[in-house]
Amino acid sequence: MSNSVSESRPCPSCGPVEGIPVGEKNGFSILRCPDCRTIFTSQLPVVGEAEDYDSYYTEGNLSVPGFVRRRLGEILESFSPYRSSGRLLDVGFGAGTILQVASEKGWEAHGIEVSEPAIESAKKQGFQVFHGELSDANFPDAHFDVITASEILEHLPEPAELVGEISRILRPGGLFWATTPSSRGLSFRMMGSQWSVVSPPEHIQLFSRSGLVNLLSTSGFGEVKVLTESFNPSELKGFILRREDSFSGDDRVAAGYELNENLMSNGAGIVAKKAMNSLLNTFRLGDSLKIFAVKTS
Image (tube, rainbow, N blue to C red; front, side):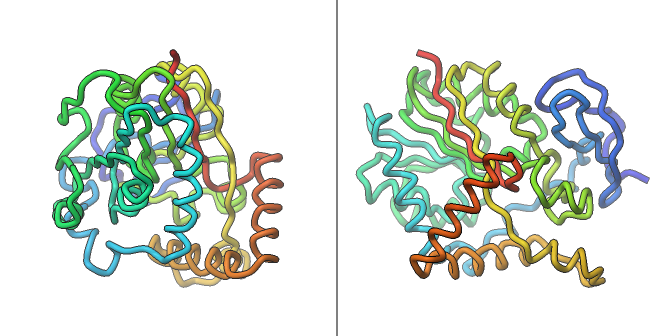
């Protein structure tokens, strides 16, 4: 029996489209949109089942490995052409690494987060942060040059509302950069709903590339690029070998850190990673969707 509310959901990308059942996970029915192939739970979690973000963030996970900071530095360098007022907002900033790196590069860094421990950590570092939902922060229209949202869209009951609010407070010509798991990557194609990223009530949708392009285009973004990159073979290896031990979200993050740290530690690994991502993007088989969307001028 499902643990969710009785009201059925439409596709979070396309709207009122009847989904096709593709499995069940943690008591939630998983559907696939026949048009864009986004996958999503048929119903939303009830109050009390959603994630407890206050207990999620602890002193142990409010820091990240050095290679993550270096990679974010490269990404933030690419934001330079969009700098006008110098204001950047990170939605769901978590450990605050984007805020830290952006501040080091001269941005006026702001953050939104629902986790009290993460908010307190960011305040101690002197960042301008808001505790709550983006819609409650009441930022002015066209206020930011760049808005980022890393691994956020898959969690939201109404992702279109967040994207619409981001469009409102982003200046014309400004950049929205985000990442979110893909419903069309190798891992989902091979493992289906057994992939650990399919994890309601934590993740209640995984977008397809075309679904994201549709969502962004209808929310005021005229130039949308979505790359499909990244693949971690650790979980798939266990799935193929039919290991009975479960692969948790923490296992996935740890395995991803280990793989990337190994690849980024030498020149050959960096070249191999770039080649792999290029191949995955060409065939649209990456497990991660990386969004670069410019608001219509």
